[in-house]
Amino acid sequence: MKEFFKDTLANGLRVMTVEMPHLHSAEMVCYVGTGSRNEEAETAGISHFLEHMVFRGTVDHPSSLLLERAFEAIGGAVNASTDLETTCFHSRLHPAHLREGAALFASMLCRPLLGDLETERKIILEEALEDINEKGEEINPDNLTARLLWPGTSLALPTVGTRESIHNIGLEHLRRHHEAFYRPDNTVIAVAGPVSREELLAAVEAEFGGWREKGPRTPPSRLPAFDDQEPESVWVGDSGSQVSLQMAFRVPPRHSPHAVPLRVLRRVLSWGASSRLMLNLRERLGLTYHVEAGLTLYDDCGCLTVDISLNPVNLVTAVRELLVIFQDLCDEAVGEEELGRAVQSYLYDLDFSRDHPDEMSVRYGWGELVDYLRTLQDDRRDIAAVTPQALFATSREFFTAKALKVAVVGPWRKKDRAEVEKLLTGFRKG
Image 1 (cartoon, helix red, strand yellow):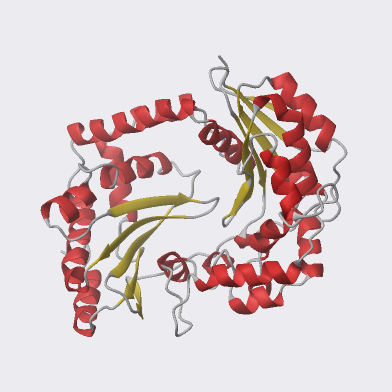
Image 2 (image 1 turned 45 degrees about the vertical axis):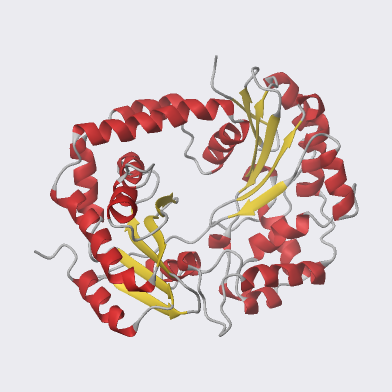
């Protein structure tokens, strides 16, 4: 069976169908090409703000309650998220109500009322407070390392915005942003489940076919070259029983030939109790309950991160051990047996994704929008072809001192900061 079908309406809207006849529910996702990297500092967070406002009612469903109930009536539970590059609206729905689902999403994307602005502003300000301590300092490690990774760019701004920018955003800003980015040629709709290509295309054509763009769209700015020579760290004191540590390396974008080796390296580092991070920091040393590596690849940049929370007395030991783990990847190639385990777990997860319409709709919806459309077959082929030599070359090129950024948040001890910074400076030197 063909993995997916792609169709494009006359207005430029792309429709991705993933036929999964063995399932009993469908997942509909609508990806819009706007995120925090499309923003200016004065109105940072406007993509996220607009995502919230779309739920505040539409011409056809004038309140958030009526909109929610309409989704519930077709088996849905609508939600959304915003990141640096995209905004995603999604809901499960009963496959018998495909046309109704398309109608609801068309109402949200094309005909939002943008009402209850001040109520939503309060909600978003509360959300922003989750990243701020009682002194008004940023405590989200993702935001802190972003400032070190992408200084002076929109990628350094928090997706939710700042308290100042959230207060700055008005109704006219939201309308202009909607006109500029919520347009058919900047949107992809993907549905996975027991639906047919013909049925979905008819439903989307009926509900979205009349959608037209209203204004010019400004492409995101490109990143400058960064000329870092040494590791950088940021330290924020905060109350609590644990220190949160994020170690981040700047890596190349998703179209790089290093993208697949990086995805496998993430598995080597962090996928199950036998992965290097869990085996060493938890099982061998007992430093933490959980440690995890993450990989985010954008259009023109990327980062590999490690997040860990631990007792402040263990901070120096944990940093030393983390650096040893990355040093080892740069000194000696991953063995065939370890690589085989990582690859096999990856291949299993690719197979398991065929039981999850949400994963399949995201794979093809997001992939089409950001021009990184990879089938399961593509991933199986490329993951299985990764060699120890490829992982070794990628590690040596990108796990470097100048690419290393660290954020430490919590009740850290002053005497530990100097020791940690010395360890960072000595990474891969001798």
